[in-house]
Length: 315
Image (cartoon, rainbow, N blue to C red):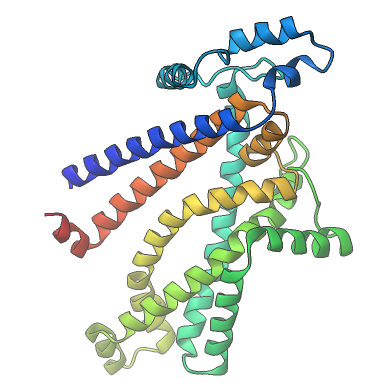
């Protein structure tokens, strides 16, 4: 198990290094001059050349990449071109909003997905089972940004039940929760279908096992068998899927932040791309990639820890 964990961590480091290399190369070839953005259109060529030299953009690409790697290893993500603030400080201010949105989205998925999967098992083979199957596949096929735009138009513009933009008033928990409902729903809805399908499949497998038949022979009610004996076992692969899917939820949160104008890593990256603020773009992408890799490694270790078949395969 320790050897497996070391391999996963090493692979994660390689992925991060490759991401940094691709990211810096991509930013290098994107048209646009960050010095012009930072200094404005009235800046003289001498002023732009001085800023280029200060940012190291006058050096060959391989030297820039080497300097970037060295700074990142020291925890230095550079300075914001526009505001001249530490990129790490800006990311630390916006990252909690993205994490809150991802956790709330996961909450939506769990609250709706697990009961939907249980309902399909209770009424398996019936119209309700077929209906939950159709709904599950339908929400899986819907892109997050389409759900975000539709929910925005219906609940914020037409019905005016919930706010359309922002993260709520500072210090007002109720306002912040109301502003969180729509973007979290838009991100989490796709995972409702995944969870419902997985819970249904796991429950059906567990329901055919011997201890379930024994419980039925003792005359226990079907609801008690499902919720007390089958669901606790069937939920294990669901936990693994949730851990793996949390990285995908973080990625989807980026689009929701743009649609709902919420502060976070997604909206920060979007505005930084528009203004050619390359240090912020690279810092935000690097941090999100690192979080994604860390979650994936944790999910792999969790699966290996709870599934004896995976542990046996690692020996």
